[in-house]
Image: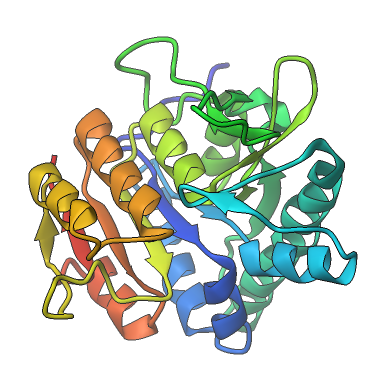
Length: 283
């Protein structure tokens, strides 16, 4: 018998490697995440976690005397580095995050459990090579859904896991149509997933409390014209540029709130309670 669709789209939470390191010894973030997942599961939905791990990749490449190069905020991924990057993200980081969430669940007697996957497991989120004006190597993107209005939680694997109460934890490693591995920017992966499943909310946890304006304070809401002006003036720069553009594109594509905030448990709790937190992108 086919699984019924959820009553609302999943809550997508993107966690970076910096967040993982900072919260490794503190269960408060994982407990807040589990509580939200249980509440949404009762409504026929749930939480999907997406993670990166760039600093861990950089550290291993340095130990192997392999270069790290970025362009336009994206990691250049030569073919000879792809298996190493996949091993860190889909292996070490993914399983460590699953372990932390499940340990917190056990300690607090939560029934939910995390399951670690990559984007290509079960062909949940097909990926393809990213075409740019320069050659980024084995860098990919989540393929757009086949229709403009996909069903919520449309991938069967994700729908089955969420319906059973599991919390999927996805690394940003994709698999192309030829079976090759692709390195997908974690923010872009989270945006692609949010589009595919028609997410109710996409939250991007970073090491900053939000997008900062010229005076250094967090901008509570941001629209595209204002964002592009800040980029042109150099106020938004570096890795924040693809994060901002991804968030705006996702807000336009899904019409769901897209929030950038820090992993500070207080700020996350505010978000989960519906209070102002971080920078909210407006479609």
